[in-house]
Amino acid sequence: WHCIRHNHCSFMAKIETGIFCRNPYNATGICNRSSCPLANSRYATIRDHDGVFYLYMKTAERAHLPKKLWERVKLPRNYEKAMEIINKHLEFWPKLLVHKIKQRLTKMTQYRIRMRRLQLKVREKIMTVPRKKTQRDLRRLDKAEKAAQLDKSIESELKERLRKGVYGEIYNFPFKQFDTILDMEKDDLAPEIEEEEEGEIEYVEGDDIEMGDMDDMEDFEGFGDEDDDGDEDDDLDEPATKKPKLPGSDSRSKIGRKSTKVITEIK
Image (cartoon, rainbow, N blue to C red; front, top):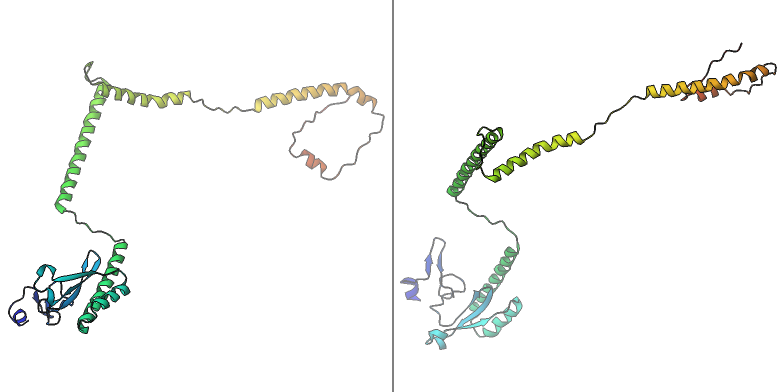
């Protein structure tokens, strides 16, 4: 320990807050005599391998066998059962070292639970995008849009000239463009034909017809009155009996009816 502490140790890390040990077998992470795994021939610690905890033990009887220096025991996930296994294998070990190992097990169990919770929680993943690449893509997009607009304007101008007959009779132009022009012309003519097919709705005044019918009805009633003139002459001597009229009956009967009175003169 005197050589490690005062001369040189590759695992020692000196910072402002203290002196720490980077050896993976150190139980506390602090550089002192009781926690150093190199200076103690009898030592124990707990290590984590992919979420599984193992109890490592070193004894002086295996010091001459570096290949079999550390004895490893797998600990269960249950905290209480792991404590029982530690008490069983470290029954006659120094109490201070056993207490440090139990503290390490408690701390590692807590951070394993915290890791599981963080894995289950959904979090946003922040990704960086190169600035030069985005600017280059934007420039290319603008150039492509300008080129597409230019191509469309040239194509529309050529089609318009071909339709007007500026180039005269051309027999070797591509058929696809010719078909597209024909389709465009059909589309332009289609709504005009549909408008011609649709019949217009007209409204006719019915006053002349109704007035003619009314004149016919008056003539017909006139003939009936002429036939009844003789009867009226015969019945002049008889006293006329009139039914009593209720007040308001004439006004109700006249509402909503057209006047069909025929004026007759009796000589």
